[in-house]
Amino acid sequence: MVSDRFPEDLIELQRTRNRAYAELAQRPRDATAVRRRLLRLEVRVFWHPSFDASVGGDPAARAELRRRAREGAGRTGTAG
Image 1 (cartoon, rainbow, N blue to C red):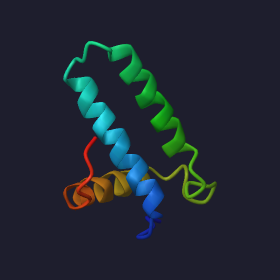
Image 2 (cartoon, rainbow, N blue to C red; image 1 turned 45 degrees about the horizontal axis):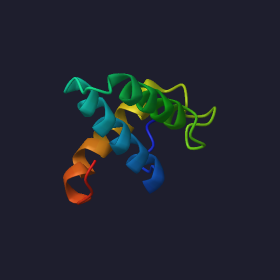
Image 3 (cartoon, rainbow, N blue to C red; image 1 turned 60 degrees about the vertical axis):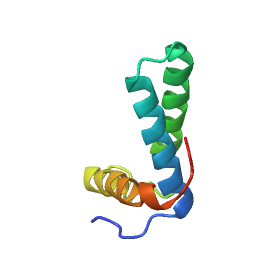
Image 4 (cartoon, rainbow, N blue to C red; image 1 turned 180 degrees about the vertical axis):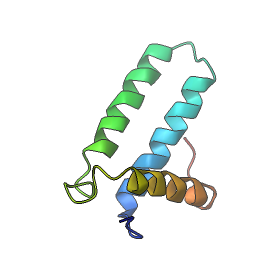
């Protein structure tokens, strides 16, 4: 079952992960540092308390989180 509610901190964490991924795609000079930051962010998203045993293994929940983070990314007003 896909949860319609994700805590705002998890959505913001996913947005930060998305920005790091986009930064890495630009082939930065410090790519190793960006890759390390991206890996840390992915671990934090994966092990977030909202993804406990009931939802954590559900790929649909993770896809929904990514969609929610993308749809709200333009409204935050924060820069990478």
